[in-house]
Image 1 (cartoon, rainbow, N blue to C red):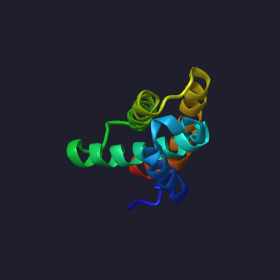
Image 2 (cartoon, rainbow, N blue to C red; image 1 turned 90 degrees about the horizontal axis):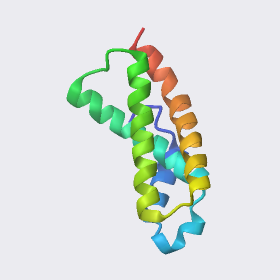
Image 3 (tube, rainbow, N blue to C red; image 1 turned 180 degrees about the vertical axis):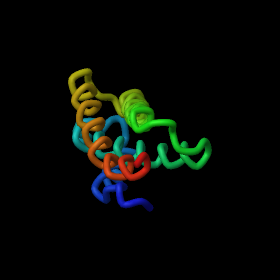
Image 4 (cartoon, one colour; image 1 turned 60 degrees about the vertical axis):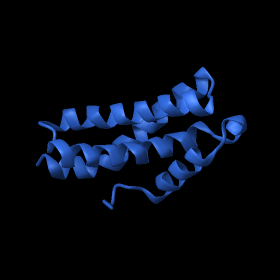
Length: 110
């Protein structure tokens, strides 16, 4: 597992997936953001294995942002979040995914 898989994000990922929809109050936007960052890292690795490295650092960042957003959208549909929490989660998740992946992406494209 690459070092950019942050342990707290992996823990958040499993906690979010295990939370039942009727317990949505227990899911904070920070928790979902961590889970989304972890999911984005997994999906990015899968994408690279299947398709090779993206053409540019910018494209890699776009992929990671897309994977992050898709996870949050799925959680909104299945776990139920209001619009404010959804937007907060998307913002925080994008920030975390960018921070966690930046070192790896710089190495990948240099």
